[in-house]
Length: 92
Image 1 (cartoon, rainbow, N blue to C red):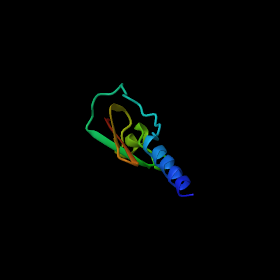
Image 2 (tube, rainbow, N blue to C red):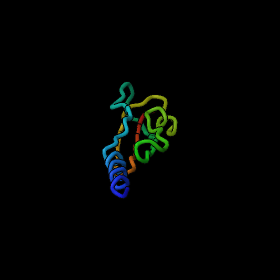
Image 3 (spheres, rainbow, N blue to C red):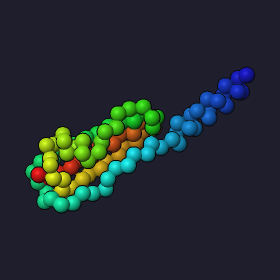
Image 4 (cartoon, rainbow, N blue to C red):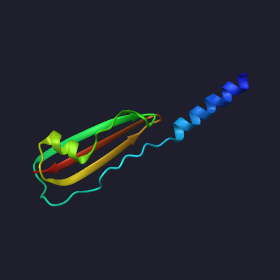
């Protein structure tokens, strides 16, 4: 019985370590000159499943009051069980 519990615990731990969330983030935007406005959106996932990830270009542009996006900067930080995504946009 103890061996079965240990094996189940090791399998769950291995799945938690190798799980990767899949988030489709844009790479760049074009059509406007670099402006003075900056907007930032970020979100986190715990264990690749739980959390709030609204780190897209549109959310960042809305936060900064930007109507024409010029540049996009994407950052991803991953820890043992937590993933953080941050999108920074500039524009007019």
